[in-house]
Length: 384
Image 1: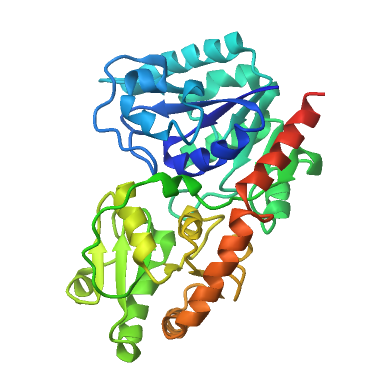
Image 2: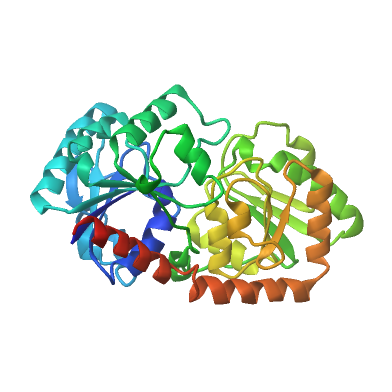
């Protein structure tokens, strides 16, 4: 059984962590797109795109990718590289080359992780071999554009099989896209183990702090977290918050930038800095107003850091209340402040949550080893 895993740079934290385990069980080739729109992601920060377009072995044109040679099979890592002016038009050609590559290699399974872009539609020639992992059963608020809806509609119409990552939205997903129950299997995310391979940088923070990390978007709930920190500060003046992530804020943050207990780092955060921030924080906060899963939570769990998260989407499945952290009501400043104060003042409870995370996500039912075995068994049944 030969599998082509068509990853995305923006999901490379998931991709590398999954491939680390699944490549021990199956013949899997990893393919990732690189272009001016997609050249920075969780695991990759490409400053200069290779000046030729085509399908290449990854380390042949990006030698820096060799840093993951001990983590995944680097000989089975390819990139679809599109460069220069008019890259969007060139992408139709490079994905035609990808189609030829997939045909030539005679893959049994084409495993997608995102609904194809329009220039990737040519790959639907092989749709009978496709399975799509659905990271977002429904688009996040603020990201539900006409193009996004169209791409999703085409994908859920043409692709025959899907892997969904939370049970909470399964039935709604089936009903909305008119899918049969047998077309969709349940799986889950585990922690982003690739982060453990990243060297840390010097940490110049000499105080305890909590952490919010990730790209800034309206659904991330920062407009509730920042006011909550003002309430936290009244009872816990030593509690610091670091907000690490680039993006445009949809509300005025001027008043919060002047507070000495809130450190807003509004820029791209490289892995080395992110790992350092996670390792040294007390716990993390994900006050999302809507969600499916959260890669930020899986980053926290890679270092056994508890999380305060909201009761939306699949987050309660990931952060089991009072086992790996706390689940609170969404869009509630008081609930958010109370939970931060409670956990901040109970370091023994933080340690208990950390031990639970380590046990269940490293070797238990929530580990990548278990997930990879289940998905490989599913693919094996498909090809019989």
